[in-house]
Image (tube, rainbow, N blue to C red; front, side):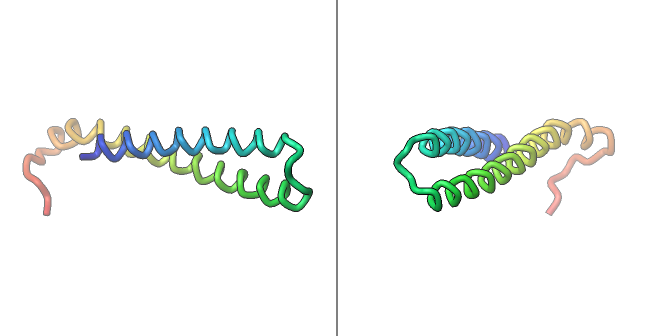
Length: 82
């Protein structure tokens, strides 16, 4: 279950990074006025910050999930917690 969540989240991060690259290429074209360029640049920066934070959180979750079996064995946890 967690592996599906992690893979899906990392796919979303990758797709969003590609979207950001496409938006930056659009900024470099001459089809936008100055206000549109400013607004798009601002949104790109905000989206980039969010993607970075999500990427870090997902990778941290992946590391945590990888350690759970060792932690459970070390502490004698052998049941599902409800």
